Length: 385
Image (tube, rainbow, N blue to C red; front, top):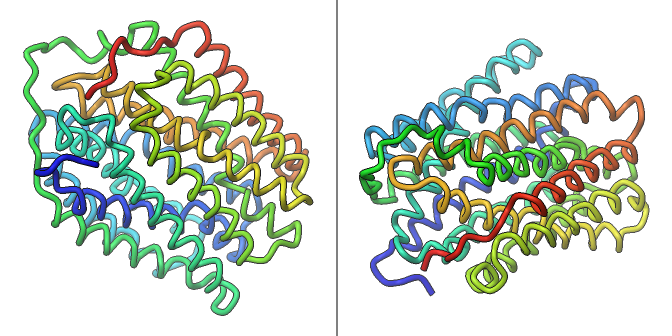
């Protein structure tokens, strides 16, 4: 359990609603864009905007958070502007307009999570290994919305999708005002952040993050469309997404024990091996529902374990005044550059070579990442807490 004095439910509530928004955007936004008549290259390019803004937005907001030490204030401002900018999606469905709107709302939406991660760890103090006990509520939010939307789409169609996204953005804004501010601790080390980044283990870690999330690009961009083209119902597609995130929730419940027990290096090696297997299963066994369920269960590792280990290593590598920018750098390298490149490659490959080649590309990314972990990444001498 998390210690008394930590605002567990308020911290968890924000994660619930933030990842509920992700539960609409990741599985279903590409489906909405397809319903507007865009081709696969255009869909891949538009989807790439969401992670691409993570290359810049989190770091800008992270710099502000580190210098003002007011993370929650910045999160609240970003949440409000996310609502206002996403509302513009209802003005027009022209490609140029959607491009501008997606650039705008993702700039603010992507600003929130890295700062919230850093602030959550500040609230936890010496109990940072219990982060996953709070973060699992984000996964539950994702599950709830992805299943509900999967059912509603059968009755109301894809026009429902932007309405639900707007609703989740409003709930994020409300939740942000419920969470108390927790100032980060000033650090006596005023060395530039590059002195941390240039360490071989840190550079290696960031490259692994890029490759891992690049491998997720095909999954995030075309998995729903892929299953729909194979004849799966929207209900079953929602269930498959939910199974993956449910597996993630279970592993989050265990991570506060697994991380101290096995260490970051061993967990990363197992995770990358299993993720390679997952992409090959999706690419070559899409007709076998039982194999798809197996692939989704591996999401416990390819996202759950990887993310928990990643957050822990960032907290170890980037200390004190570098915390906000460290989390932002992790987000921009992985969920930003990694997913953006993976999404763009997906848009280029999907029509020309098909899903099997695309998911082989994904598995190659994780194999290269595995080699880097094997050579450069070691577990910290001690896990916090």
